[in-house]
Image 1 (cartoon, helix red, strand yellow):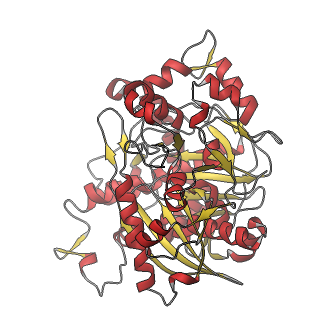
Image 2: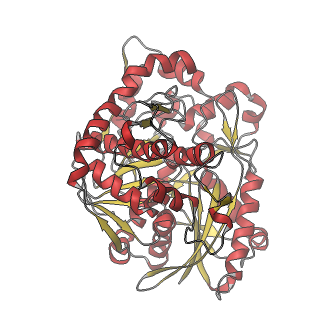
Image 3: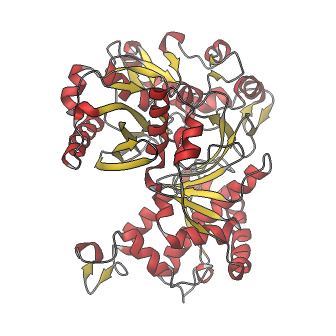
Length: 530
């Protein structure tokens, strides 16, 4: 069967055409970008028409790159960034620019609600935390959480709020635009912290809805990720270059499907993802949480299973920043005054690959330089929107290559920190699957193995694991089979990296210093950014 999946990230969509039979094959893909509009008040917004234009152009491009015909498509779904907020009218039209997961305009709304109370834990009302934890083993501990975006609009844009019919995440807005049906998948409903995860009580929790002051009529019907939303409408089919009636399935958030696409869908299996953001996630058959470290068990694509999930907001985004501001601005990326990607015959397929080869020339430990990857605040193992990135211990003998290596090592140090925080509550696995764009470099894979001390495994199509997991969920929905079994059967290991004991001493020293840098600078971050 042929399946189209829209892997919808922070800055671009990658539209993928898969063939699933006895294996899973990526036949064609196409990417298009859209804007992310950062505002001085902490906003991070996007444009629905830019999203739709990107979907239309990439869908049509698939059929120019393959022999598959639109009428042969058996199903489609979205795998999107999560914890966004899209407010729509009764016809499913967005009433304002959607706020994505980085948006923290609602910090005052968060503080006014969660900061009140006689007894507080981590700055939050103990009563409200207990109410949440008793219902879904999670709670809002960040102004970036969706409910505060919703509450910000209620307070600051009352005319928009008055016209709101439903409150959606990004996946559901796109699915609704394709089918005309407005729903929420369980995983994005859970991300609002208004969802009840207790067995037999799954759904919107009336008590939490009332506690946070959310209007019940704004909350849509909830379905599972493998459920059918509906058929593609004629209007959407014409826009996309597809055939009306193609089944559109629930889909959901990227964190929901990456474990499935990584082949880490057995209880106890851990994977690490590095894309724009990064995370450590362990698949579970029960829910767990660590409030101090802001780790919780988010819903999987299959009811009754969870991903114990710790997030780093800016992972690959840090390296992208370093590429633009350390490499491209002056020296290092230019070879005889020619950019390496300008040479079509070059063996370097990307700037990332080239930089990693350059970084490999720097000894482990980056000649003493340490970088903190908190370039848009941080969630785990400490929540602080004021935290920021920095280079520590630069000396006169250090150069840009040291700094570039330090960025990658800093990301890996933080991933190890989150891995250890998960181990404080549960047992993580060894080996660990490493996926996302960050896993495409053997240098980074070996670095992660050395810093974590774990065996690291990569998989085929590692950059498309979210889309692969979603495609498997669609296939399971069509066939009526178990998505977890499909993952186990079809996702294969590509390469294995073992820790190099020779690098342990320097990485252990730098990691211990890395862990002290937030505590030593938290007050300064507050003064500078608070």
